[in-house]
Length: 350
Image (tube, rainbow, N blue to C red; front, side, top):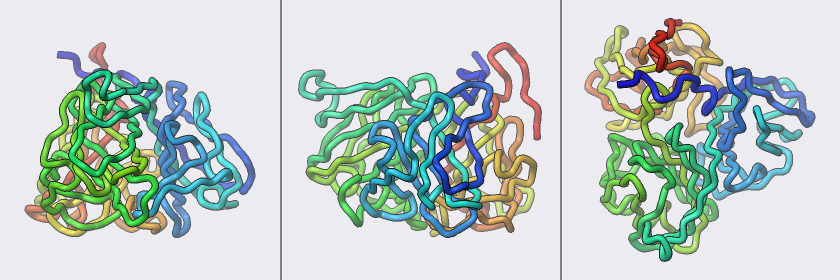
């Protein structure tokens, strides 16, 4: 069996750091590969501000904010274009105010798809978007019907994580499908709440290698334009899973099969934040600098939660948000490098 499906993760995921200058400018990635992103998640690290999520399917000037339930906004001065090896920013204060520090987490999809459900017999709602089969990532756009339905997601493998947002209706939470909150549960990206039983969002039906199921509510409001970010595990590049905390400073170890570049963790049996770490803001262990997907808060510099290892991550805190004894957690992780390349070359630890 191959050690990895992807030798160079920077072909599909990169992180950019910059200091705002208040002027139109381009941000260029520094990874081994040039990469034109299709999803950019940007965050002001210095000040209270939103998490801004932009993608190529909706268009560069359209943004959603993961920290609240509001509808889609339009801004010509936020992110202005997706470039061949990065992206361009306008003069807007959200990501480019003079002197602020900011981060952009960026994923590549890149191949357009469109599905006429009645013509193909795949799903019951028409969908379109952008997909990268190699990286196990797709962006899916559809319009809700308000009743039980299935939607083509663009991948040929079963999704392990799905993040869905109603674009046009206010007071509709982001909904997350994960390995822990299975199709019988609800979990909101913009909230700290634990998982709760509900058949509203996923119709109590697990996704398949071609479609995912919805019923009503935020994932399928009648007449509402909706966007979804869909992920499937890829060996040596991405993993979406769960772990149980042990309450010790020598905490739970989670095997990924790669050295992580980006990690988001959420406790699911109790109320806690969605905590994001990455290797650019914290290039050495213990990984201290964290941001929350569900708040406007600036970067937290006080807590060291994890070590990033050559083949996974290890909890280094007793904090309940990441490692309470018996606590259950989900995670999303993307690679800096596979543990061993397809030619047998091992990666080094930090």
